[in-house]
Amino acid sequence: MIEARHLRVLRAVAGTGSFSAAARELGCTQPAVSQQMKALEQSAGTPLLIRTGREMRLTQAGEALVRHAAGILAGLTAAEEEVAAIAGLRAGRVRLVSFPSGSSTLVPTALAAMRAAHPGTRISLVEAEPPRSVEMLREGDCDLALAFRYGGGAAGAAAEWEDLVVTHLLTDRLVGLVPEGHRLAGAERVGMAELADEPWIAGCPRCRRHLVEVCEGAGFTPRIDFATDDYPAVVGLVGAGLGVAVLPELAVESVRAKGVSTLAVEPAVEREVVALTLPDLARVPAVAATLGELVRAAAR
Image (cartoon, rainbow, N blue to C red; front, side):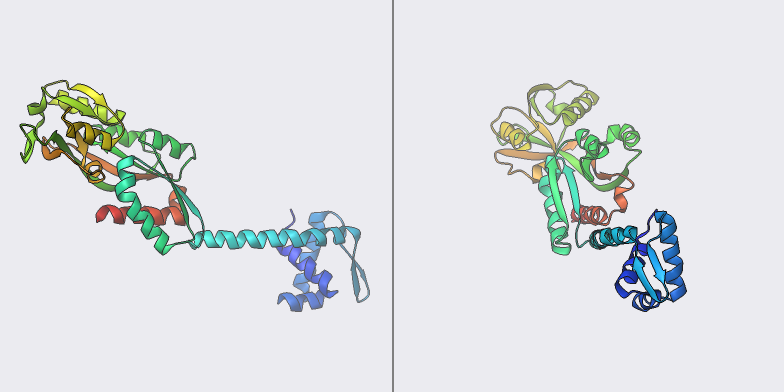
């Protein structure tokens, strides 16, 4: 195995013409230079220098190694500088995946703070709902994933994520949405059972499953007339008088809720919003910094 430090010594010897001059250039002793040259020749398996009295010249193998050493050492220096830049957050990248309501509320604040503090770090964003976002993390398609889990399924989600680093960001309460002309519009809160006979607008598949579970817990099965992954579409359908819905507060915050009234739901229904990453990725400076900004954004 040829070591970079030995190549540096060989270049110094070739450039200065002697061990003593190379030692002065490298800031070490002449015996140290001699010892490293012996180690390099052993690694190469052939003589690299011809010593005749005070003169020293390269063998054909030595000339070949010096010729390649320039490119090897230049590439190594460039690699060291790039790694140092990444470690010092002067460079690097973070691939972030988030569910839509997180993308429109938490993510912009966090990414703006990252750009201001670490302009050399590139951050990309794509949207995906869990569990797809979690699959992307495990498959190496992203470095950091925003996800959520509902209270009733927390134990199962905890087992599902046991190999990941889970950072709690916030607890997001679900609120009820009814058209402005609805009999319950203006009420501060509503029991789920009071909505048993209403047509429903449902959200993403995971949210849809959870809606059915909550309604069944209140003693009824919801009649879902429309289902869409698009939160503005949910709000628009409710505003048009086509049904009622429950949405996370983050989702309502990200949409101009025109023509609808929001009200607290009883019993309270909550979901935990988290950031997920892999243990090795959590130690990458750019990922750790982005995670920190997401935590600060959630605390605002």
